Amino acid sequence: MTTIAATASQVFPVFAQGLVLSLGLIVAIGAQNAFVLRQGLRREHVGSVVLFCALADAVLITAGVLGMAQALGQNPGLARAMALAGAAFLAWYGWQALRRARHASQLQAAEGGAGLNLGAAMTQAAAFTLLNPHVYLDTVLLVGSIGAQQPAGLQVWFVAGASIASLGWFSALGFGARWIAPLFKKPRAWQVLDVLIGLTMWVLSALLVRLALQGA
Image 1 (tube, one colour):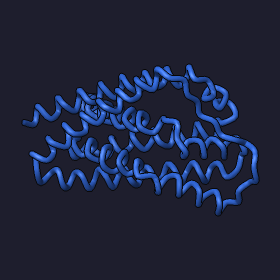
Image 2: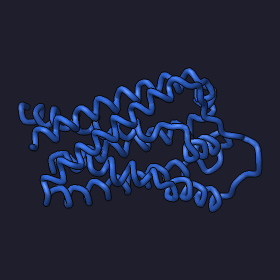
Image 3: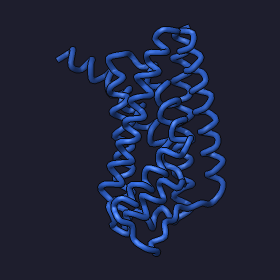
Image 4: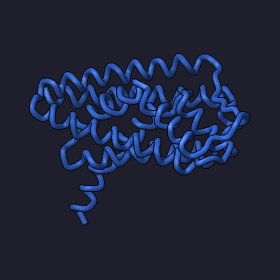
């Protein structure tokens, strides 16, 4: 029982860190989210679009963590540098979120226009996902480098947390579109969300700094 409890106490913080980091990066007003919301509002190929976006994130996150883990494992100095760079980025990202909270904004997805067949919907989902350079910055470089800082036996839980966050978010957008779309049209909701994201990013940044200093 003691071993199970100790394992759970190690797994949960790593899983939670991957979860909140992924949510903080993915919850934003952008073309991909607007497209998923549009498909949900039109009830067109929602499952396929949601699954593609979530699987793409999971693959990129896994590749980033595994690749970064191998690179950083061979160079402790680089690992510390990447941790500090990630902390700086998260601090900046948090500041940007808090700045956004000062201004009203909303996520809109038009329901009009011609419908898409499955091939066209998947092509657009792939374009919005894979042709966006920020996707690679977020999933492969940033999430990958932070996940690689975790102990080898716990990296899979970090990836699981980050991937579940992606799946949960896209599922909420797609399958819950008709219920949550009115909320996303309210600027106040996004302001509150940006404040929460900003504070969360600062906490994660502080944790990364502590991790880098411990390894020094």
